[in-house]
Length: 160
Image (cartoon, rainbow, N blue to C red; front, top):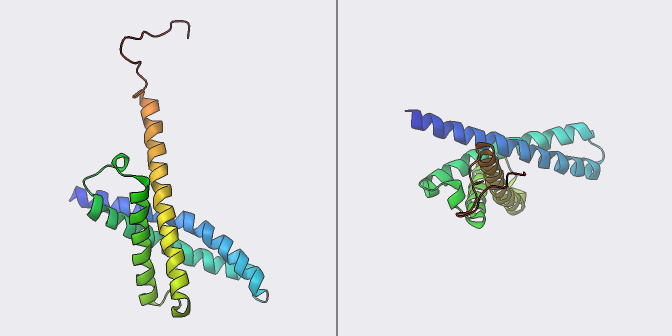
């Protein structure tokens, strides 16, 4: 049972991470749309897009986490290439787009555009997630002193 709780916690964590990043994209998109629309109060437009993108980001991150678990469950992050990780993110974004259109969250008139944006956001978010995970892992190694040993035959310089 603990394995399932860890997996659920990981999916929720990935969803929250993506929701945060996508909310920023939604704020920028809402700001642009608010300026273009003009007549609607800017705060209302921005808030609408922030909420929509954050929700999509959360579900996109959770879907990606599930896709990754199913497809690459036996591999660690450091064993996966960035393009492969991004491809799984794009697939997760595409699945999210299909689900969002089916649920009526995204309008059918912009299905291709919305689906394309969500797919690209999924690929970018997956690549960013891998980069963050690798950076955190490298920082942990440095703090633990791993990977800092001298090559064989070399002795430390006492003056440093």
